[in-house]
Image (cartoon, rainbow over all chains, first blue to last red; front, top):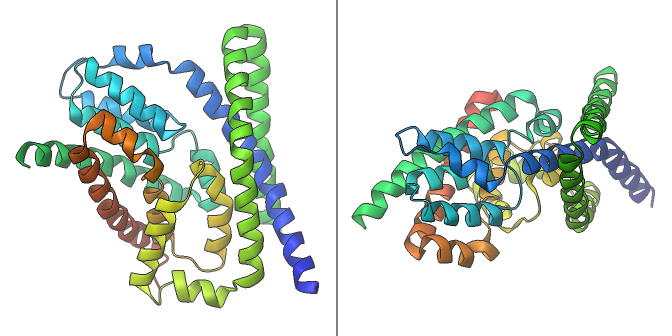
Length: 138
Length: 169
């Protein structure tokens, strides 16, 4: 019984600590989503070698349901944007969180958050290249 | 205790900054403010059930798991089992990524390796219910390849995080 009381108190303290970060991160994500519209994003691509990098950067800034990234990615196909760029974009959308970075570093440590995001960004570009290569040979 | 207080102050500082930005926005650009607020309330309603699940999990984990158990399952002693648990838990978990930070922070304090947290977070990108939509937009071949590479790179990233963050003992 005493154990349940201690655990409840511990969980409640955790909630109390987490609440301001979650609300703040939700406010930040909502703001970024309002500013980054599909139209603005599609105008940024120029059809050069830099597109995958640009795609990965936009994906890193964006946040929200992965379904949205698939729909935007699907629209990108219609705009003639390369599969490497689309892959980098949808991968960084779900694995890199620049918007969530403050919350991640507060809760899991700055060093962890920094390196996890850097590695996820680099992985997205490598995976995009690998997918483009393997799609061509399979 | 002092560090804990600084952490709590930082948490409120972040929220205060966001509140100030929104107040300024409501005066300077009401359109963006309204769109953002509408997005915020919709998302908040969507994440409440996930939040409830996560805090219930934190409660249960605090009740039944102690440091010894966490170290045994997700620490440095059993690497293969740790990777497998992180991959499957990451794939099966749902809700926004930031909702999982409190639980992961709690498990980290109890001895979970940083590399496994990175692997868990990477695999959260694989959403089983969304795979049919991905197949519809990008083909079955693309979806299989992407899923395979994501699992592979989640382990590579986990190993690198363990080495870089430096909690390998």
